[in-house]
Length: 349
Image (cartoon, rainbow, N blue to C red):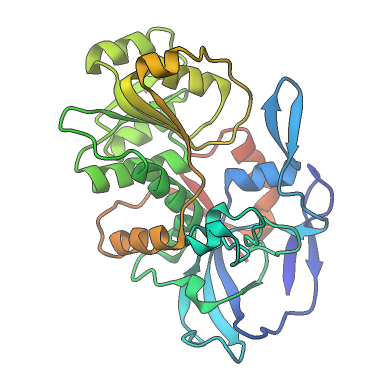
């Protein structure tokens, strides 16, 4: 098998050829058909998350060399003797957010919140999909994606699930309650679609880029605001009375400041993005405004299954995406790091 591996943090990936693994026990071997490129891959490639004030958090504590890639779609080509239900020749999307299986989070079926995760492509020693083949530990992590484009099916395993999981945390907005999708890249575009599906109403879009805002409006956003325009914050509050919920798919100091400035009393800010930085907030204003600040990290296996049922039923529109060969992974990571990608880039080995 061929893999594009991180051999040094921040340096170009290297193509490495290794023996194709043979699945053992309940394992399933997938021949990678499509693998999406995610902002998490950028942070893992850099080797850290930016905590602000010059502080860095090691990203994933990866041991090198390592194969990234967690938005995976492909064909079952071999199965272990205990991999019941996995059919050779069938195509699936792969749920990558796998836990240890024994901790309290895993026993609550929240493997994505496991303290000792075995997430495909994101955990030490667990190779991802920037390769011709990838091992999946159990058939239960293989999801039927129906008749949708397999490239999109791959993207739903992170950007889709992350957006879906975040929107589920919005709660039950009223008829006049407005939801703001802040950051309209691949995640935000997914967020717009799932907001429409879950709440029966279009959200508001906010971003610093005119192109992404235009794409958001084409995707169904009811209004668009330039979040780095000093007047936009006051205008949005004036137009809406303040947002019931702001889903921040950027996660930067500037995006949080914008979210905090537009959320209404009793509203909630859901931080999803990992751009980085730090914030300072006056503690009395949290109870006085009765605002909630929530973090959201991808989603559970059951949420992935619920999301894919919505997708298979055609209840969400596809987001923009482009396909590139796996050999262009470094270019894709660089463009994503620079904020030059609208929608999603999906690689084909």
